[in-house]
View: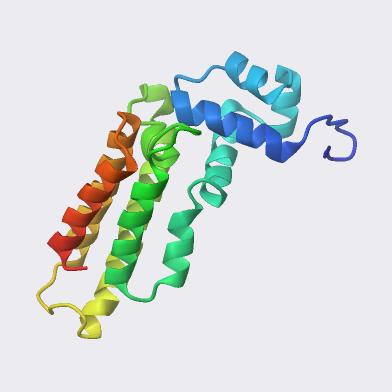
Length: 198
Protein backbone atom coordinates (compact mmCIF):
# COMPACT_ATOMS: atom_id res chain seq x y z
CA UNK A 1 0.00 0.00 0.00
CA UNK A 2 1.12 3.53 -0.56
CA UNK A 3 -0.01 6.99 0.32
CA UNK A 4 0.93 10.52 1.26
CA UNK A 5 1.11 11.70 4.84
CA UNK A 6 -2.23 12.92 6.08
CA UNK A 7 -4.22 11.46 3.21
CA UNK A 8 -4.86 8.06 4.71
CA UNK A 9 -4.67 6.45 1.28
CA UNK A 10 -5.50 2.76 1.42
CA UNK A 11 -4.72 1.73 -2.15
CA UNK A 12 -1.67 1.16 -4.31
CA UNK A 13 -1.22 4.10 -6.64
CA UNK A 14 0.32 2.06 -9.49
CA UNK A 15 -2.44 -0.56 -9.34
CA UNK A 16 -5.06 2.20 -9.37
CA UNK A 17 -3.42 3.89 -12.37
CA UNK A 18 -3.23 0.61 -14.25
CA UNK A 19 -6.92 -0.04 -13.60
CA UNK A 20 -7.83 3.47 -14.77
CA UNK A 21 -5.59 3.05 -17.81
CA UNK A 22 -7.51 0.00 -18.98
CA UNK A 23 -10.86 1.80 -18.62
CA UNK A 24 -9.77 4.96 -20.47
CA UNK A 25 -7.97 2.86 -23.10
CA UNK A 26 -11.07 0.80 -23.74
CA UNK A 27 -13.77 3.49 -23.60
CA UNK A 28 -11.96 6.74 -24.38
CA UNK A 29 -11.88 9.94 -22.37
CA UNK A 30 -15.49 11.01 -22.79
CA UNK A 31 -16.84 7.47 -22.84
CA UNK A 32 -15.42 6.78 -19.38
CA UNK A 33 -17.54 7.70 -16.36
CA UNK A 34 -16.36 8.40 -12.84
CA UNK A 35 -18.47 5.46 -11.67
CA UNK A 36 -16.58 3.12 -14.03
CA UNK A 37 -13.26 4.53 -12.86
CA UNK A 38 -13.93 4.22 -9.16
CA UNK A 39 -15.30 0.70 -9.59
CA UNK A 40 -12.26 -0.43 -11.58
CA UNK A 41 -9.83 1.29 -9.21
CA UNK A 42 -11.60 -0.02 -6.10
CA UNK A 43 -11.90 3.41 -4.51
CA UNK A 44 -14.64 5.93 -3.82
CA UNK A 45 -14.97 9.34 -5.54
CA UNK A 46 -13.50 11.38 -2.66
CA UNK A 47 -10.40 9.17 -2.68
CA UNK A 48 -10.06 9.60 -6.44
CA UNK A 49 -10.26 13.38 -6.20
CA UNK A 50 -7.88 13.50 -3.24
CA UNK A 51 -5.28 11.32 -4.93
CA UNK A 52 -5.50 12.53 -8.52
CA UNK A 53 -7.51 15.77 -8.63
CA UNK A 54 -10.06 15.84 -11.43
CA UNK A 55 -11.00 13.26 -14.05
CA UNK A 56 -8.80 15.20 -16.48
CA UNK A 57 -5.85 15.14 -14.09
CA UNK A 58 -6.32 11.40 -13.65
CA UNK A 59 -6.48 10.92 -17.41
CA UNK A 60 -3.13 12.61 -18.00
CA UNK A 61 -1.61 10.64 -15.14
CA UNK A 62 -2.93 7.60 -17.02
CA UNK A 63 -1.32 8.85 -20.25
CA UNK A 64 2.03 9.15 -18.45
CA UNK A 65 1.55 5.68 -16.96
CA UNK A 66 0.67 4.25 -20.38
CA UNK A 67 3.71 5.84 -22.02
CA UNK A 68 5.93 4.38 -19.30
CA UNK A 69 4.43 0.88 -19.53
CA UNK A 70 2.27 -0.40 -22.39
CA UNK A 71 3.43 2.24 -24.86
CA UNK A 72 7.06 2.47 -23.73
CA UNK A 73 8.35 0.75 -26.88
CA UNK A 74 8.19 4.12 -28.64
CA UNK A 75 10.30 6.10 -26.16
CA UNK A 76 12.78 3.22 -25.91
CA UNK A 77 13.13 3.14 -29.71
CA UNK A 78 13.67 6.91 -29.85
CA UNK A 79 16.35 6.64 -27.16
CA UNK A 80 18.20 3.69 -28.69
CA UNK A 81 18.11 4.25 -32.45
CA UNK A 82 20.49 6.79 -33.96
CA UNK A 83 19.50 6.11 -37.56
CA UNK A 84 16.20 7.62 -38.66
CA UNK A 85 15.45 4.81 -41.09
CA UNK A 86 16.18 2.17 -38.45
CA UNK A 87 13.95 4.07 -36.05
CA UNK A 88 11.08 4.11 -38.57
CA UNK A 89 11.47 0.39 -39.22
CA UNK A 90 11.59 -0.43 -35.51
CA UNK A 91 8.54 1.68 -34.65
CA UNK A 92 6.47 0.06 -37.40
CA UNK A 93 7.50 -3.50 -36.54
CA UNK A 94 7.07 -3.06 -32.79
CA UNK A 95 3.70 -1.33 -33.22
CA UNK A 96 2.55 -4.37 -35.18
CA UNK A 97 3.53 -6.46 -32.16
CA UNK A 98 2.08 -4.20 -29.46
CA UNK A 99 -1.16 -2.86 -30.96
CA UNK A 100 -3.10 -6.12 -31.34
CA UNK A 101 -3.75 -7.67 -27.94
CA UNK A 102 -6.05 -10.25 -26.48
CA UNK A 103 -5.10 -9.15 -22.95
CA UNK A 104 -5.44 -5.37 -23.21
CA UNK A 105 -7.56 -3.00 -25.30
CA UNK A 106 -6.18 -2.81 -28.84
CA UNK A 107 -4.27 0.00 -30.47
CA UNK A 108 -2.66 2.97 -28.77
CA UNK A 109 -4.32 4.91 -25.96
CA UNK A 110 -2.69 8.20 -27.05
CA UNK A 111 -4.08 7.74 -30.56
CA UNK A 112 -7.56 6.47 -29.79
CA UNK A 113 -8.76 7.84 -26.47
CA UNK A 114 -9.86 11.32 -27.60
CA UNK A 115 -10.57 11.05 -31.32
CA UNK A 116 -13.95 12.75 -31.03
CA UNK A 117 -14.75 15.02 -28.11
CA UNK A 118 -17.22 17.77 -27.32
CA UNK A 119 -16.05 21.37 -27.36
CA UNK A 120 -15.75 21.32 -23.57
CA UNK A 121 -12.99 18.72 -23.86
CA UNK A 122 -11.30 19.98 -27.01
CA UNK A 123 -8.22 20.91 -24.95
CA UNK A 124 -7.84 17.26 -23.90
CA UNK A 125 -7.78 16.15 -27.54
CA UNK A 126 -5.36 18.95 -28.38
CA UNK A 127 -2.89 17.82 -25.72
CA UNK A 128 -2.88 14.32 -27.18
CA UNK A 129 -2.60 15.75 -30.69
CA UNK A 130 0.49 17.68 -29.61
CA UNK A 131 2.04 14.49 -28.24
CA UNK A 132 1.48 12.74 -31.57
CA UNK A 133 2.79 15.71 -33.55
CA UNK A 134 5.84 15.96 -31.31
CA UNK A 135 6.61 12.32 -32.12
CA UNK A 136 6.37 13.09 -35.82
CA UNK A 137 8.72 16.06 -35.41
CA UNK A 138 11.19 13.83 -33.54
CA UNK A 139 10.98 11.25 -36.35
CA UNK A 140 11.57 14.00 -38.92
CA UNK A 141 14.62 15.20 -37.00
CA UNK A 142 16.05 11.67 -36.95
CA UNK A 143 15.47 11.35 -40.69
CA UNK A 144 17.03 14.76 -41.30
CA UNK A 145 20.16 13.54 -39.52
CA UNK A 146 20.19 10.57 -41.91
CA UNK A 147 19.89 12.95 -44.86
CA UNK A 148 22.72 15.14 -43.60
CA UNK A 149 24.88 12.03 -43.08
CA UNK A 150 24.20 10.85 -46.62
CA UNK A 151 22.23 7.79 -45.58
CA UNK A 152 19.19 8.93 -47.56
CA UNK A 153 18.77 11.10 -50.64
CA UNK A 154 19.36 14.83 -50.19
CA UNK A 155 16.02 15.42 -51.94
CA UNK A 156 14.08 13.50 -49.27
CA UNK A 157 11.25 15.45 -47.63
CA UNK A 158 11.95 14.16 -44.16
CA UNK A 159 8.87 15.73 -42.58
CA UNK A 160 6.59 14.16 -45.20
CA UNK A 161 8.27 10.79 -44.64
CA UNK A 162 7.82 11.09 -40.88
CA UNK A 163 4.20 12.16 -41.33
CA UNK A 164 3.63 9.13 -43.56
CA UNK A 165 5.01 6.81 -40.88
CA UNK A 166 2.92 8.60 -38.26
CA UNK A 167 -0.21 8.18 -40.36
CA UNK A 168 0.61 4.50 -40.85
CA UNK A 169 1.05 3.97 -37.11
CA UNK A 170 -2.26 5.71 -36.42
CA UNK A 171 -3.99 3.56 -39.02
CA UNK A 172 -2.43 0.42 -37.57
CA UNK A 173 -3.74 1.41 -34.14
CA UNK A 174 -7.29 1.69 -35.45
CA UNK A 175 -7.04 -1.55 -37.41
CA UNK A 176 -5.87 -3.30 -34.25
CA UNK A 177 -8.95 -1.99 -32.43
CA UNK A 178 -11.01 -3.33 -35.33
CA UNK A 179 -9.53 -6.79 -34.81
CA UNK A 180 -6.43 -6.87 -37.03
CA UNK A 181 -3.87 -9.47 -35.96
CA UNK A 182 -0.12 -9.16 -35.54
CA UNK A 183 0.30 -10.77 -38.96
CA UNK A 184 -2.13 -8.30 -40.54
CA UNK A 185 -0.28 -5.35 -39.09
CA UNK A 186 3.12 -6.74 -40.00
CA UNK A 187 2.05 -6.81 -43.65
CA UNK A 188 1.10 -3.14 -43.41
CA UNK A 189 4.36 -2.34 -41.61
CA UNK A 190 6.45 -4.04 -44.29
CA UNK A 191 4.68 -2.18 -47.09
CA UNK A 192 5.47 1.09 -45.30
CA UNK A 193 9.06 0.02 -44.70
CA UNK A 194 9.43 -0.78 -48.41
CA UNK A 195 7.86 2.54 -49.37
CA UNK A 196 10.37 4.58 -47.36
CA UNK A 197 13.35 2.34 -48.17
CA UNK A 198 14.01 1.34 -44.58
